[in-house]
Length: 414
Image (cartoon, rainbow, N blue to C red):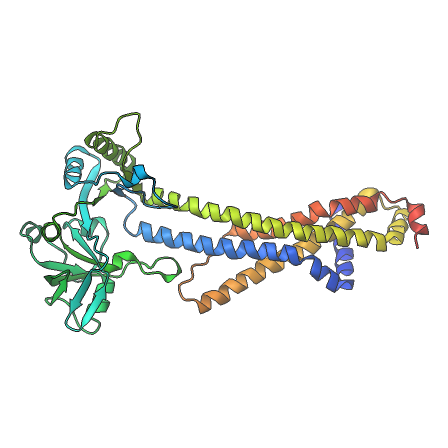
């Protein structure tokens, strides 16, 4: 019985909306905009987040990263953080000796010279990342050698002038030939190319992965070139099933070595794939909160429009309401008639917003290469459900007004 009544009310509502197309269209505009905002922002953020996840997890889910600064920065660093002392090679050696849950650990160091240039004959690359690496860096960073090989321990110990090029360095310096065995100049030093690394996954919006800009040289070769640079980053890999234990062990060793009191926070950062993603999620949630406020404002505007049109509809159909009551319609029947009408009105607006929002994203994705967009199910549910809820909330007062009309007075209404 209730189901047939809802179906009947829905038919009456649709007939009413058809007769007032222009007014109905203008009324649902706010709801339409609110739903479209939700779909567009949530889809881009979800795609952006997935790109970050893919990029972080590409290096390994058992990896642990240690650096003196936060991995995800949302503003200016405080003076205390900026003045943290650098990590040292000896820190990595202590972790290797004292942390039983750590499978492998390496220290790395990167040139701070932003004006660095790599050259090969007439080709050059501006701003490559010259990195001093140990042989185990290949395994910890999940590098895939495309041609040649990676640095050996003997080359590192003997400070050999060899290098391994990442994808962008290969494309810039050797666009039409193999680089293996050839010599390039970086920062005034000459290196023989012994290997190349396959391209890493691109970042959000098709942005280049910074790892593709690397030129790897033996660690001790780098320290020979830049003896005054000692700002190390540490990369470790835990044994399977012992990631949390490895993190605790690394933190304990470094706090002891860096003389951090038990009452003080650590003066270094430890990151994993999960923790870096969690830090990034905080930024995403902040943007989602702004999106929620914007969509709420649009829904409120749409809701006020729905309330106005429903109040006008009650006035225009006063005699119809009186007639229905005279024929036996109860208050709740009248209430549901107008509530269903309001919910269908806003529900149509929400559905159109969802469809148009996704269609717009598909069109933009086709035009903008690398735009990450993936509409989460919750965004569709929230977009449509929120729109229908606007009709329920803002249509309640006009529905109650209609239900309270006296049937005799309503029939007399001109």
